[in-house]
Structure formats: C-alpha cells, structure tokens
Amino acid sequence: MPRVRKGAARAQARKRILRKARGYFGTNHLHKYRARNAIIRAGVYAYRDRRARKRDMRSLWIVRITAACRMRGTRYSLFISGLKQSGILLNRKMLSEIAIHDPKLFDRLVETAVKASKATPAAAA
Image 1 (spheres, helix red, strand yellow):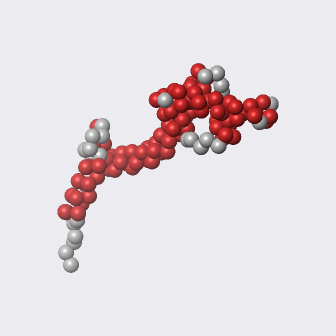
Image 2 (cartoon, rainbow, N blue to C red):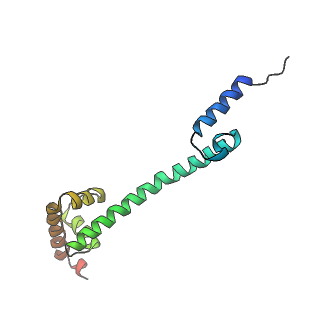
Image 3 (cartoon, rainbow, N blue to C red):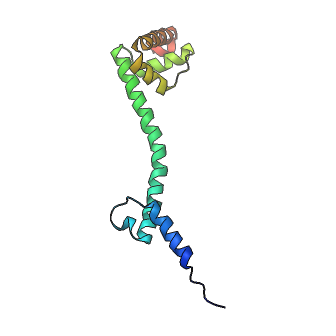
C-alpha cells in the first residue's frame, strides 16, 4: 500500500490558518505554527474582552448617572434606591441615555427618587 502524504489537505489546512492570521505582525501571519499560536491567543483575548466590555460599559453608565445626580444635588445611591422604592424599573443604560439626551425627564426622575427615599426612615439613617 502506498504512503499517503496529505499534500492537498495539508496545504488547505495551512491556508485556512494563515487566512485567519491575516494582518498579524511579523511572522505571525507568515509561518503556520506562529500563526496558529497567535490565533489561539487572539481567541482567548476576544473571549475575555467580550465580558470585560460589559463591565466597562456598566461602569461608564454609573459614572454618567453619578455626574447627573450630583449636578442635581443628590447622590447616586440615594437616586437608585429611591427609584426602586418608587417602582421605576429603568436599567442604568437607559438612565444614562436619559441623563444625556432628556435632562428635563431626568430632573423629574430625581425628584421622584428623592421623595421616595425621604419617605422611608431607613434612607435617612
């Protein structure tokens, strides 16, 4: 039985790896083994950073809401707890968008939250 050398399959595999590594620096887009390692590492970073982006965005929204609350003379924690007590269910992304694009509505939300937080004795302590 003749020996099989995988000529076409090996060339296709190399081409597939190098196609994924297009645009990488140095030999990472030229040599198959370096490219394979670079692709694996890039995948790890991509997986990690898809989750990190969610954390970063949430912290950005909180910073925006905090700044908007301070401009209106209240604190972020009192604002959020007041919204929960008054039954307003808006997530932080929507609250930051409202704070930027519709300041009058955000003023009304702050007033509602402050009234709700003052109505309960636990918020005053």
